[in-house]
Length: 296
Image (cartoon, rainbow, N blue to C red; front, side):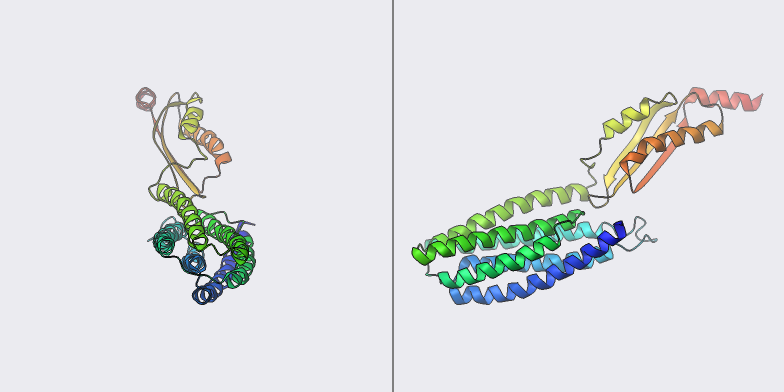
């Protein structure tokens, strides 16, 4: 089921990419024709989305490769790389668009409201379909793409409303003002996604798993004396890795060590870690007793 989901999601990203790149070219020249900075700014934004989708398509495919000697955890984090690049591209594009829109407010120009209306209808339709295709993404990379496309739908819906207003009332600053509002909203959310991506890149503990909770569950076991070096991080925001070093007590032979590790595995099972490693050692008192028994 998981394999089928990832295969379908890769195909959906592919469809969204071709829809987005085709519409980006159309709206860029259309924005120049109707003299709308909102449409041109959205074209630049969509260009960033197209680059993002292209990278996501490639990196999503790449992330499915298995482990090897160079990448012992596999290529899973390649999808995370896509989320990082996508966020940086959109931040740079958003800053450029805001700068251009501010210039248009200072020196306003006439826009073709009817042309804007036509492009807005096409924009809502194309971006709406693309957003729907990628809406069930699970990885952080897929979520970033889904969010971008959803923002495109909202942006074009706003352009649609403004174009209708401009047909009846020629308010020159409305188009660039709308562009600034949409882009600022995009920028704010992209920065939040970038922070999430960097947190995973820097191997922060996943928000959905508590290290303190795991440590408490381990210490509830009579055979656990101490926990050391509990490490929890995420490969891509979805697949998590856990390692721990536990000091055991009251263990008299090797079979009890095996049973203790089985109990620890039972604690970890509900968390569905992609990788987990448990190292155990005996406390000094138990270790001395075992050595004495072997000596006698």
